[in-house]
Length: 392
Figure 1: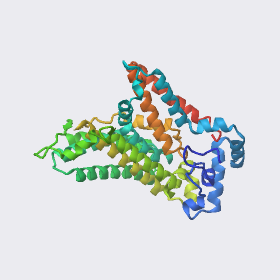
Figure 2: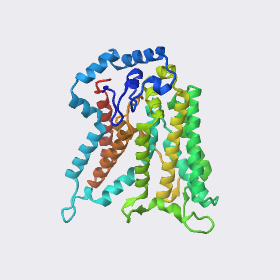
Figure 3: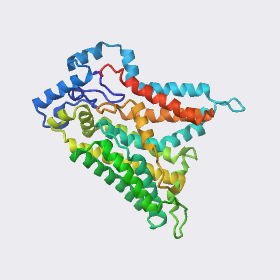
Figure 4: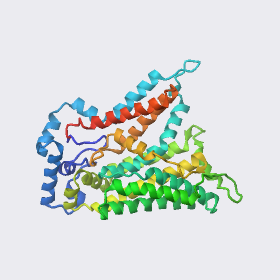
């Protein structure tokens, strides 16, 4: 097993050759189908250059001979971190009058998952972009645009729920694809493109809503949304599981399965590990990048729909700084901002870890300013832990 393995995706020879952590057994030839020996050699050399100056074979031997326990701890840092924070939350949770641990009550735990559902959905989309070495700063504004779009289409344009949701999701997908095209085809840095996208999406949201929050009321009359949309703010399974938490869980399962079993995921890791080698090996780099940004935009739009359903409003100011929380969840989950390494399970664990941390700090009425400091330190610690991976 290579030292570049991920939380839930086994490493293969492709990850070694390109510097990425591909999800399953595949070489550049299988990933691209038209690999050349030149591309293979380029990938091997670049991977060695970026790690520690050693050749890949040396890196592999070092990984195998290193401390398995420490390596496993670092590799699964997000899961261990989540377990640690969870146990600490149990210990420091306030007690009810009957001695009940408030943190462990089902109501609190499901509220915790509901609270992170929007950030979790955004983080899932961001993982695709970050795996290819990109970044997307527009997701928070795109959430606001999607929330406004949902509210306006349902209450002012008399759209049905299915039509409104489809239009909003399509808009998010197209927005992401356009950003991806700018990054891949125009070779503009993702940071610049998505920073501009942040401004554009926020501006569109303000124009669409007239700068005002659009309330959503339910009924069959004019200016009222269909009652079925209100389900997003409800609970299911005998009133226990919040619908947003259920949506997040289903999306998480689909995303994990997709990254485990698709050829597309191998291309993601190959591009993030070494874009030049991946391109030389025949990986459709531009197409994969564009699709990755499209998926990210689609997820942000879905989060916006959930946001509108939970709050029964479409605000053009919704989602401010959500992009930072989403990126934090991905980083805490162990995905490298340089691309080529990470996992969807890690991202989900990172989102849950931050959610648990927020929850226990709130239960203990810790000062909000101090909460920011603590969360910042956790993010720094997670990023620092990535530097300790043997392969780096």
